[in-house]
Amino acid sequence: MSQRFLQIHTLTSYPGSLLNRDDAGFAKRLPFGGATRTRVSSQCLKRHWRTFMGEHSLAALGEPGSVRSRFTFEKLMVRPLIAGGVDEALARAVTRALMGELLGKSAKAKKEEEQEKQKEKPAKGAGKEKGDVVRTEQVTVLGRPEIEYLLGEARAICAGRPDPAKVEAAVKQKLGADGKKNLEALRRGAGLDAALFGRMVTGDILARCDAAVHVAHAFTVHEEAAESDYFSAVDELQRAEEDEHGSGHINSAELTSGLFYGYVVVDVPLLVSNLEGCERSDWPAADHTLAAEVVRSLVHMVATVSPGAKLGSTAPHAYAHLVLTEFGSAQPRTLANAFLRPVAERPDLLANTYEALRLHLAELDGMYGVPGPRQLAGLGPVQGLCQLLGLERPTALDPLARAAAARVLEP
Image (cartoon, rainbow, N blue to C red):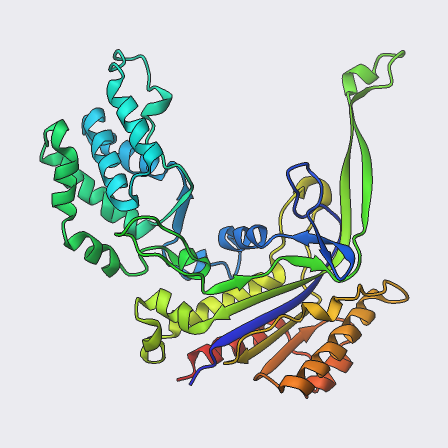
C-alpha cells in the first residue's frame, strides 16, 4: 500500500532580497532557538505555488482551479447575468439570495440587506452605489465548476421572472434538497488548488476542503542578516540644471540574505480523497493518477519557485541547494530542530548546515528509527548526508520528483 505521508525538506539560499514583508515593510522575522531568524510565511509560499504559470505548474495539469475573492458573485455571476439580458435589479437580488443560501447570512449582512431595501432606487445613468456591489465579508474560495453550476442555476431562476419579494423562496426551491448533492457531485468542484491547500466555508451546502498539503513557514538556519539599502531616484531633467544635483527621490529599504529551511508535508490519503471525491478511508481503491502528477509538480515547484517580492530591484530567483524527500506512515516530523542552535556562518555556512542536518537526522533515526524510503538531490558537500541515507550519490531533481510520484501510484 502507498505510504501515507510525503515530507519534503529544502534548503534554499537567497542573497540581497526582501522575500516577504510585514505591515511596516520590513522582512518578516521569527524568534527560534534564542535567536531571531528571517522568515517567509507559508501563505506567501503557497500563493506563489498556486499562481505559478511555468513548467510543472498546477495550471499545466489541465484541471480547473478556484477563485479567491470577495467579489466573485459580483464579477462572475451578476455581470454575466446582466450581459445576458437579465434586469440588473433581478440579477442582483437572485445572486444575493444564492449567496445567502450557500454561505449563510451573518447579522451584519442581514443588517446591510435591510439598509439596502430602504434606499431609493438610483436614477438611470447615475451609476451604482457602493452598497449595490454584491460582495462577501471575507475572501471566499469557489471552484470554477461550482461557479459555472451556480451561474446556470441563477440563469434558470431569472428566466422564471420571480416576484422580487419572493426571490429567496425561488432560490430555495430551485436548489432544493438536490442543490448540495449536485455541488458535491461536481468533479473537483472546489478547484485543484483548494484540493491541495484547503478552504473553509460557513454554509451547509458548499463542501469544506481540508488542506492535504501542509506548509511550514521557511526560516533562516542562522541568525538574521539584514542591511539597510539607501537609494535615490535621479530626476534626469532636473539634473540638467547646473545648480541642481538631480535627486528626485531618496529613501531606504531593508535587504536580507540567508539560507532558508523549508518544510512541506503531503497527506496522500487526503489528497486522493479531495481529488477523487471519495471518502478518506476509501483512498487505496481510488484512482491515484492525478495525485501522483500533483506530487511530481509540487516537488518541482517547492524546489524552484521563489517568492516574488521586489522582482525588479533584487531578482530574488533561486533554486534549492538541497531537496530531501521522505515517505512513511508515521506522523511526520520537521527537521527544523537541526537548526535550533543557529548554524555558524564561518568558515562554510552550507557545509555547516549539512553537518547540522546530518547529525540531527542520525539522532532521530537512532531514537525513532527510519520512517521510510528517502531520496536526496543536492549541491555542494552532501557526501555525509548521502552516506547516512545509504545513497551512493545525490540524484537530480526530476528523477527525485518522478520517484515520489511513483510511490503515490503504488497500490
